[in-house]
Image 1 (spheres, one colour):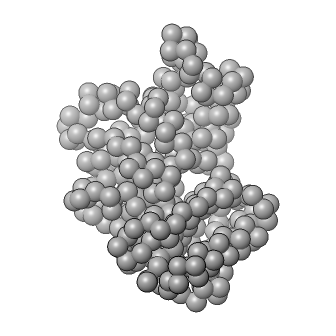
Image 2 (cartoon, one colour; image 1 turned 90 degrees about the vertical axis):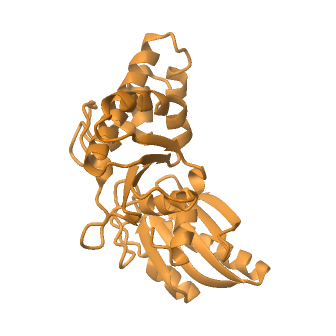
Image 3 (tube, one colour; image 1 turned 30 degrees about the horizontal axis):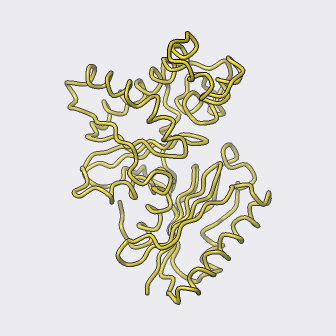
Amino acid sequence: MNLYVGYDIGGTSIKSAIIDQKRTILYQDSVATYGLHDPLHTIKALMEQTKTFIAERKGSLTAIGIGCTGPVNRKTGAIHNPYTLPGYEGVNIKTMMETEFEVPVICENDANAAHVGEASMMDPAVPNSIMITFGTGIGVSVRLGGKLFRLPGPFHPEIGHISVGVGSPDLCYCNKSHCFEHVMSGSGINRYAMDTYGQSPEEVLKNPDSEQYRKFLARMVDATTEAIITLSILFNPEVVFIGGGMHLFICRYVMGPVQERLDTLLPVYGKTVLKDSQIGPLAGCYGAAMLATGQSG
């Protein structure tokens, strides 16, 4: 049996999935990105788990796909991200896995991998779509004409750092206060809730009749709406997928009000529909495994 492995490396967790030729998920797992403190030990532990499963199944590992929060060099596999992956900078996971498993390893931005995973669940997939992954940071992937949008060179554009009309008291590591990621990532949402209200986001949003509920929600809706309007004007997507580790929170509180605004504000550009990820947190590792099968997105 030919098996394909996908890894999704994020700032909070590393998720893995193993699929067969029929794209069926046979195995999935998740470990803390810093569970063993040393990134090399964490990656080695993941590889050992993978080898154990494949041996138990008596399968043949054919290829590996890796989705990693950027910046990551998709050609060489070197991680250049000291911000949401501190300690992993300079680690070359592609080389490590090629040496260990002796199979082809495909490296990709994590939002692109998640987009491939999500698009593969649609039959047929829409030609123009966007994937926004809300997690420790924010990832954005664009598909145009059924193909992933890429810049020349090995790096994915950091679209998550586009400017929005909502500011923060401090600066993002991109040196902007009105940065989409800084406002709407899991880190940003949690930081603002604690600094402003001394509570977790869920505690702030407990009482829909409270002033803090209205202000906190309006801030998130404003920022997300502005970001999606900008992306819709540029790329005219039919669908914007909402994924990542924070997708349940975003879909519960933010997605509905944002969709209402989009329906009012975007008649000229067509109807951009927001969709919750069908496979949720598994989109990244499933998409990475799909890339390992040869699917280009």
